[in-house]
Image (cartoon, rainbow, N blue to C red):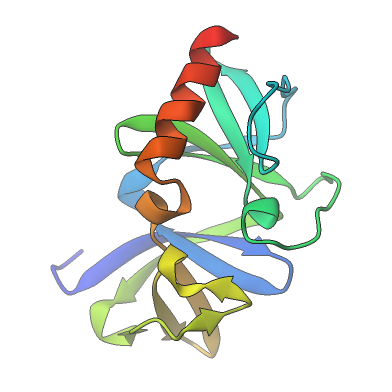
Length: 155
């Protein structure tokens, strides 16, 4: 991979495809039991035990103001590391890993797929497909990460 390319993990929410930098992705998991944690924001589904580590889990649909959807066979939890903390992101499906040319990435429009631009790092076009690239550091800000860390420590 050259400096002019970005490797992304592609996932789906509703009818849109999103991407996160593969360097932030630790694993992609099937949905496993999630323990609800009281007094957390509604988009925080709780915590899960991931190979002995308590990992907070958030529902990206809920975070982005989309209607929630029950988990099915395609639902996945993408384990990412952001701001030094592991967090699980519930997505409708995790499709594949792609190499994007940096020249295929355009600046973020004000709203993409109905999602606030602050969560986005750009939009990429490739082979007739459109990928919305997420800024993980904005999907969860530092205060929310500290709150999640506290919730994970209490469980």
